[in-house]
Length: 239
Image 1 (cartoon, helix red, strand yellow):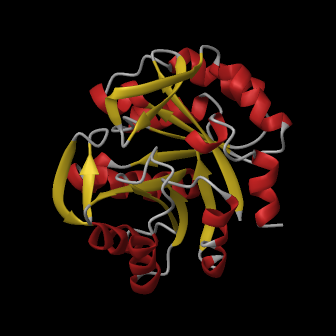
Image 2: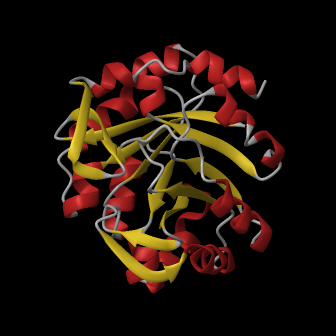
């Protein structure tokens, strides 16, 4: 099981938000490239990048930073946030991104989402961001009427093998992962899952070990940046 540090980008800086709220931002670094290097040096096998400006507005302000991270680190990168067109997918891949995460278009433009999944294969991941069992879109600023597990089933039919599942109410709170939503996805699909949101301790990670056949990795943000959990300690839980 992979432990994947998160690097959330806003206006060229490395930040964390509380439950995705742009008004509740904490800045953890003005040099995200150096942050990426540090995670790689500490042993990370993959990094999770989020373009928050792209997620909120559809217009990235972080292309130079993302490209620089792609040039500087050798481990795989996955990128989400405002990826809502074929051009955006192609641009991300040109920056050295291994896996591009789509979310909003899975709800609002399903035909385009299916085409991208077909054409780019394993280079496309679907992010399913849940709030009270419903899928949130546009940087979590809007809620859809689509149930989380309904979208999971749908993208599986489109050929997706793996998703990123985030419980928005857990994100940035360090209150532990959402097992209820994860269990439903595991029960009702055959998808592999990367879990995100709320993880703050080795005990939280241990809660996921029983799901190790289906949970491919965990994304950790705030707990790593506040040193409540170290990357080596987190990785040791699954070794």
